[in-house]
Amino acid sequence: MQYNPHMLALAAAVSAAAAVVAAYQSMAPTAQWYGQTFAGLPRGSRQLALTYDDGPNDSHTLRLLEVLAKHNVHATFFLIGRYIQQEPQIAREIVNAGHVVGNHTFTHPLLIFKSEVEIRQQLSQCRSALQDAIGKPSNLFRPPFGGRRPAVLRLARELGLEPVMWNVTGYDWNAPPAAAIERKVAKQIPGGNVILLHDGGHKQMGADRSQTVIATDHLIARYKSEGYEFATIPQMMEKAKRS
Image 1 (cartoon, rainbow, N blue to C red):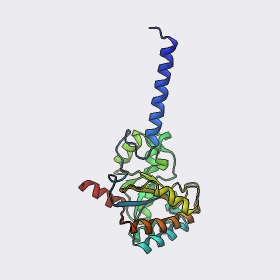
Image 2 (image 1 turned 135 degrees about the vertical axis):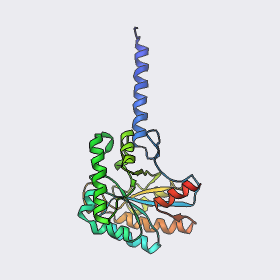
Image 3 (image 1 turned 90 degrees about the vertical axis):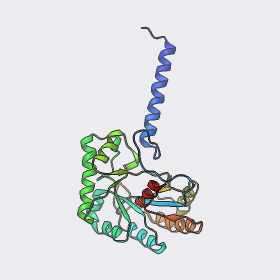
Image 4 (image 1 turned 30 degrees about the vertical axis):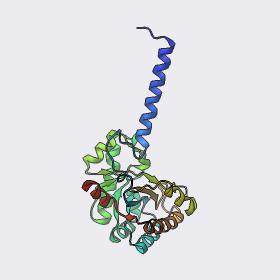
């Protein structure tokens, strides 16, 4: 069969479009093409979940715990295994304060480019670090950068992990001013949201998260005054099951 230039151009365009869609589905936090993940409750729910990635981080995680305690709010922390090993006491402080922890891999790689052996190793090593630090593993998992492909989600579930994403982000990884973080979050809140913030940084221990701590204080006060309830991810998941 002979192909004319128009057919070849069309085939190339279709292939390029498919690649764009695949890339979107592998990175977009609410995309479900590659497998079911939890990213929040139906729009309009009066429940919100604060989640923090890339800790434990000395000393901003501890300052964040103080803010959460002041407001009597519990959050969910997705921890990096190598940092758990460096600061196991901070991991224990998180749990002792009533918060929930999750598996955020051992070194925070983009898993869509890793082999199945490497993916399993990343998840298992973080699980072991959690076990050593707090006496138990976690059944929650958040892929670094949100990156996943079918094998990532399959291997996570084989290890008993429930993938958790988000549907609101504070865009705080470059440490913008607290007011900017608050504005970003506020623009995206219809209710029922899983909010992504950071108490650490994946590149090194000690990332400056002081502005996220301040933003957290303001966001909790604002949304509590508007009648919202803050929940952990397991609490939100349980509510989703009952709905």
